[in-house]
Image (cartoon, rainbow, N blue to C red):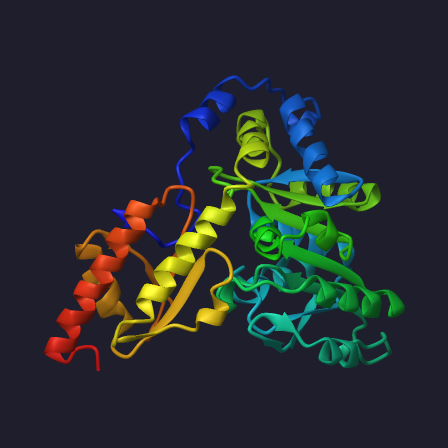
Amino acid sequence: MVDLRSDTVTRPTAAMLSAMAGATVGDDVLGDDPTVQELEEFGAELMGKDAGLFLPSGTMSNNVAIAALTRPGDEALLDWDAHSLRHECGAPAVLSGVVLRQYRSDTGIPRVSEIESAIQSETLHAPGTRLILLENTHNASGGTVIPLAVHRRIFDVARDADVSVHLDGARLFNAAVAAETAVVEYARFADTVTFCLSKGLGCPVGSVLTGNAETIDRARRLRKRFGGGLRQAGFLAAAGLYALRHHRDRLVDDHRRARVLAEHLAELSGIQVDLKSVQTNMVYFETTGSAKVWVDALAREGVACLALGEHRIRMVTHLDISDVGIDHAIEATRKIDRLLSSTGASQ
């Protein structure tokens, strides 16, 4: 099976498993797991921040950051299609008690003027804007990259209004590779930054939240409150350290394969692909017929992908997808396109 559902489906490499098996561990809640501490320090260094915190997931990392940077009743601004709004089970409202207000973006790139005009001061009647959330790469827009200049402009707006910025950098290393820019340059324009180890970097689990020492101290307590206290987590942290040292540069291969796949999909009669949105490791496309029919048919051909709507499908390249796998996916989609076109099911 060529599994293109997500870059979260990867399996640890033999070298990563060896690093995990050889890890020195302690009890992270008691503060004595040296491998976790090494990962947190290295993650903070990469982002140019004072401190880091290892968490089980990107969702928990985002919500710990939101809670650390706001008070109940504060307002947070985020993109209308942000992961924190669409795919985190209402956690910002439930766990942090924040009011979420949406701004629009263009293929994932925020409209800075709209953010600036949306910021409001706290009054007797209105919540004050306390936080702006950004997401880079922007998942729902196809893995698109927010340009560094936009980050800078938003950060300047936030500073002028005394508002914090959190960067959901679940796939920030993908953005940095695509933009040929160091991740620290993006992190410079955010108070807190989270990045996932369990996506393009190929780890079985985990994210790292980075920020200043005071914020991360507060985040550590919030992690415990949210149920994210970890014990012998060094085995997992060792996978993260291995990935950060060995799997970042290879992300360019995922991007190349996604582009090859997208260009071939664009040639099919029953599919529409916006090639401008294929900037990293994701390929979103629209089907003229039922997306579910496509997904089911592709599964029978040994290709797994996700239907994200009646006519929308996502495919994601990752560590476990080779050029041979992409070739198989291309041939399978061609076969299904011919079949559905001949039966009229693609219409």
